[in-house]
Length: 256
Length: 296
Image (cartoon, rainbow over all chains, first blue to last red; front, top):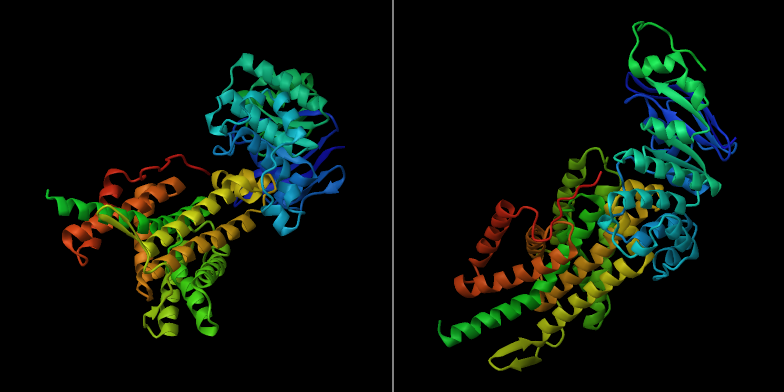
């Protein structure tokens, strides 16, 4: 397996934001993670990238335990993410944004002087390829803050890809996009997967999630209430209850 | 307006603009640190002054040419900048922004007391160059030592721009100042970038301190107060976080100071300069180049 979460919990005081969640993502898979607002999706991403230390549980990448590693170490091993609210380096050019992502973790291994004071040298064939892949080549010298909303989203994804990840975590990439944009986005996500990157997709736009994921899991109140193929999920009564409300509030969520 | 007053006014403006580059450097230092840390380092002016004393102390130990005294001053201030970072910013909790601010106020007073103690509160002569040279342009004359001060400060700014826009450190610094969280995820060692920013700001501050002392020919502990207040006025005018703003702000404060001195005398001039602070804070709190854009 590619990415594995075992018994992952994160409690903030008395709030169980994520509660005993286990997930297994296979290599080359597009895995969806859905759930109502506040169900623990973003906390799960933050646990995988290492922003939060879990209350209990472990996360591993290709069998290697990541739980004790810092965020940048996980980046270097192949975990990358995009942000729901775009966090580009707005005062850097498009190419510079990619350069920082590609070289940030390499720089750590270099000698102090060559790490910081080696001048210039932004030319890079990988960056050029990534710019073309993301249809941003004509904008490579524009400031990131001057891009259109759609271009910013593409740059966010390109920046995540620049660190050469094995797993890409997409945090609501369709937020603010129309349904037609969502379909284009679906094609782009597939294209990324075809580059050999496994994808964990957190999304509210059901058409997108149901359309492109191989498997998916559903969170509700921090717990995993279902897992399976999109058609399994669509017919799952617990999922319907979580999204539409249920009369029987005491009903225990079923473990899938 | 009679002719001689007009000449005096131009002369004051020219002197003010030349000397204003030292204020610009101090403003840039405040701005750089604020850029990456989003915190004000109030110990900055005092650290710059202490660094200037390091250069003077080196000259006491072994005779040095003026240029080397300036260089050691700048370097010393860079090292003190790093100590300020360790003492006030590195280990103070980021969840309490006031902790770092108050620590830097404590550091300001601490450094000030230390300098007064070690120097016995006495002013010392500080070397300067081109003291007797001058250039005459019609009725206006430009002092050689002021021109030197101007040249060194501009050189420092050029080197800073080279660092920021032509090296990987500059790229990392700009990335951290925009999006620290994303920068960290990209693998940038943000702690090291922050530390280096304090060192670089310190070197700029030490250069400004050395040039201030060289312009008057005397180094005294009271310069710390002037560096701190003028630096803060510069960033209020230019907009905290903007380097071009700090440069314009520095030149404006330098020019305004000299014009007020011409109009109202040396004891009154700082009153009017301080008034500029309140005018800007009320009418244009973001400064000339301030950006209202937030970050996380």
